[in-house]
Length: 76
Image (cartoon, rainbow, N blue to C red; front, side, top):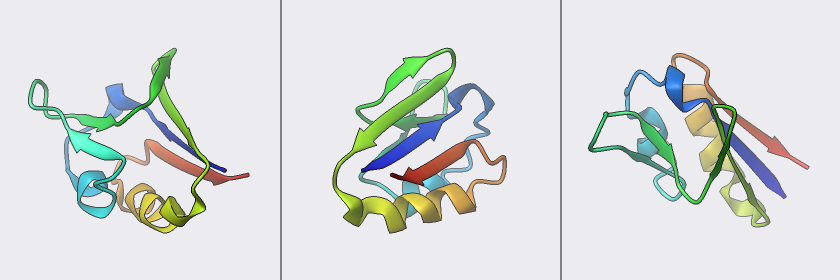
């Protein structure tokens, strides 16, 4: 199980997450910030749980590339 969390309000719109992990991230046309696809928002944190562990590498690259460190990826 992979858990990806995004603090969207702190996003600066650099687009790295969408480049490294297009399956889970897109850039919003409305405000230019990152969107974590299929996620649920709670208190400013957008979270998704994915049972497919093959996405871990691309999600981890997106998290490490983020200059403001607002993406976390956990393997449980």
